[in-house]
Amino acid sequence: MLLIHAGFLAYEGGASRTKNVLATMVKNLLTLASVGLAFFFFGWWVYNAFPFFPLTGGILGPWTNPAESETIKTAMVYVDASYPWSPALGPNTSDHMTGVFFFAFALFAMTTASILSGALIERVKIGAYLILSIVLGAFTWVVAAAWGWNAFGWMFTKLGYHDFGCSAVVHGVSGFFTLGVLLNLGPRIGKYDQNGKPRPILPHNLPLTMVGLMLIFVGFYAFLAACVIFLPGYTKETTIYGTPMTLASIGVSTTLALAAGLVGAYVSSKGDPFFTISGGLAGIISAGAGMDLYHPTIVIILAFIGAFCMPKVIIAIERMGIDDAVGAVGVHGFCGLFGSVVVGIAAFGYPQGDGIPSINLIGQVISALVCTILLGFLPGYGSSWLLKKFNLLRVSREDEIKGLDLADLGVEGYPEYATPSFVTHVTTNGGTERQSMSSPELATE
Amino acid sequence: MISPFSSFKEFSEAKGPVYTFANNPTMIAILLVICLGITVYFFYASFTMKQEDSKPVTPATLAMLLLAGAASLIGSLIPGQPSRQPTAAYRSQPAIQRQARDWQPLAVLGLTGVGGSLFGRKKTSRRRRRSLR
Image (cartoon, rainbow over all chains, first blue to last red; front, side, top):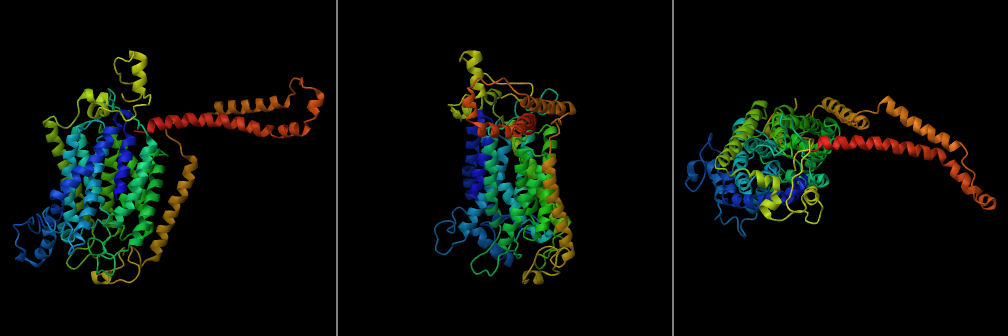
């Protein structure tokens, strides 16, 4: 799963301009640090403590009496193992599993925050990003997982919500959180002309971006395989909800979703390279929520539809004045929402446990909206609004024009290359002052 | 029904297919045909795919391309200036000369191809500039 992060690193680095490549990659890399530590301090506890809150119980913690009910007693075993001081997280010969789950969930959390990272490149303050990554990666998506990706979660037990591959729980939350942040962050300088018409800001290394996405694809096989539970003593694989499934079918379905997603985006975007390769991811996300149940033909159709619509969504968002540098809202937000809602139709009626509603459209819609709006858009908008009010969200105009590599890190990503800004600097100013590039067609560099 | 199971007990104890429409082969067949249609359309579209702003080859451009190809072909048929090479030396390489003449139509095709690829290159360039963001 760590390959997903190698992929995000390359993806974002390639999508940035030469003057921002190092700062972009360092920012992405620091996600592992900020989310990894925050997840240890409280994120893992949030996952285990929030499943009942607020509908079927309170937040579980040291103050909870396990004797309240059998369910609480069972849940408290996991809560007690999730505190940073818990003996379950260190070397412990009597507990071999808690650490495995912690590790898997921590990587899920880092993935969620990395999705945000790419959209904000080239203008967000690194400190602001780290705070946002903690809010998203160690809290809001974790609450979504506690409610909708947990056998005790109220969205599952009360509404019958089913989201095997975390379409809304991970992708929907992070995509809409990103949308909220982008509204406050604003577009990069030069992204829009005087009439508000978007101008392309070219990735400095599209092949690197494409390789990054290939790495993400590889990592996603592990991501989805990690959604399969097979514990010591089990006789068969189950989902996190306790329903039967097979690991082999995840291999088949992930492959087909990737293939059909590429086709959908390729056809829809008329062969655009960026959209086409993003289509693979869009396909997997669109089919992920019900991948444990879908026949391969349904996987193909849903992945195709989701990926076909994705470029249109990204273009519409861009025309609305929202500068999403990597299309995160379209790929993750839209496809996550679509993928989780469509389970209510494509897998309608599957039973999920005694006393738990079968898969149904209303439960899927309500839960998907809870994930995307309540735990995605609103926290993203609110936290970035606060940072903006304290002037902590965006770098200064001068730094943005100069490039964050020099402004933040003091070094260039390609010091030995004759970059366009270097050539301009040498030829027009005699080496005295660095000049920014601008042209009527392209955004200013 | 999409789900082949009516109760959780039946589902959790199932031995065999648990996927959607597992008890409805007709539906699976219909879905398979749709998937096949998507795949066939993908291959068809890959031949006709063009970006919106890439201008198709106009009749005038095509005519000029054909004209250039024809002129090149005619030029190859008209005898050139006599060679100053000694006759003996010229005669010593008849096989090579004949071989070169045999390749002339292919050379014309190659010239045409170069022209075509130049047009294609322009289109690609425009497409890339517009699409990347």
